[in-house]
Image 1: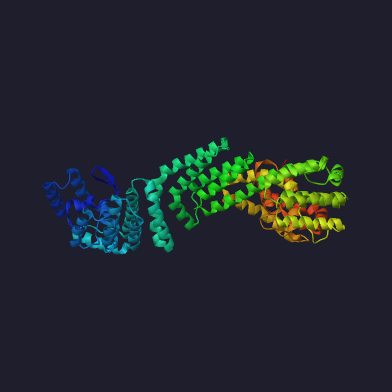
Image 2: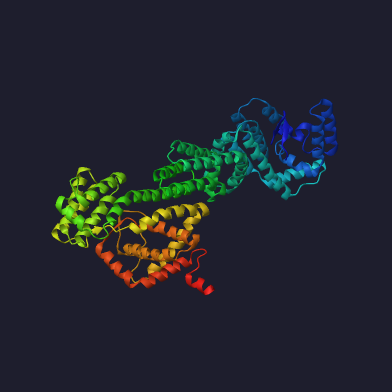
Length: 612
């Protein structure tokens, strides 16, 4: 049904612009009665000639009149219709009008309430009344009413199919009218959201079907504003990427995200209820993911974390996005910590297994502010890293690993004892966590007693190779997530990790994939998985060629680091697993190739050679 011109304004629904009302006739009027009513209306000047002619011609045409019959009060007693129009002409409040509407038959109630909504901003109660009225309409009942009216007026009855179609069109018209009743689309957000939440809470399919039409009208209404706010998000992301140290740009991004999310909340709530994600909703999150990836590549970890947190808060109505941003946040924290740990790792690596000068310096002046030579340099780097990574235990444990190495492999228990003593003294002064101090004291006791290496003593593994790959893997994962969407990226991850889990279960010693996290004490099966997977990844890295392979490889590295970059283990377990790796290198290589065969677009070297 076309919009109605009233007082110079085009309204999507207006009972006063009804042909039956304009001509002041009964819906059962015959053709001659319509002509007579037209002449009387012209004489009285009830409307312009164009309006009267249009009303007459519409009612005389069976193919056109159905939509006007359905949008009239045809299921109300004829004697009550004039009273209802009088009430609509009064200054009655919306609450009073709703109370009257509650007493009407369903179709009349739907038309009555839609008229109210079209002429004033609707509260959620008014929107819900429209939904409830349409749910209550029985198409077969309306069909029977129309057959009686048409037979009385001498017109052919419509088909039930056309009545059903007409009622759906009427619902769409009412939805448009309700949304158009607001001054701006933003004014509609809260009432539409409240109505949406109330209807979804019913878990009734007929109600949700009607609600979907209301939300479709709302979606069309906010389309232009939605585009503007997406542009604002995009501009804020570009500005922050160019000037990551400008904190005011973070506020601009947060506001743009909040404005967009606020506008889309009713639609997001509906889509979450149905388990469907609109592609439009992925645009802002994709922009944020791309920004986080760029900031991470540029090692702007603090800013990347802030972006992840503010995006999480702004998009809190989207649980899947929140979950994924939490995961990204944890990965960034891991990368940030790794970057801060790198000076200490590099310094220790710099000895190239020749710790003679460090041993001498430790035995001479110990490890602390008074240390000299190599031990003094180590102390300076250690203190700086501790300050940068506070309250992390990693710098303490890395130097503690060095002490264990000096005692076990360097053969110098005195140097190892001096290094551990210095760590303990420093930890006591700066109030290091008791768990760290307890571990260090146990290690010192074991080294002094000459029994370090007992199976009950947990130690931390070296993590240089996986940590250094993790930085590039995070950026790769963010890029893949941006390209595919996080849901597909997660599917990729599951698809690629699954083969290794299956392979592990067939090995002589079972591999147990550990949960994501750090600081855990792993049993033999999980230690085996981490070292076996590291070996498989080493092989895959050598054979990964082309962007698709690199993307797939990076996803596996992200997963590996999330499970295997920070854990405790028994020395005897590591010795067992290393022996198993040496004995099973060919099998692990075959497993690596099997995993890579599942990657999209991957071609093995053997296949490529045979193709030639």
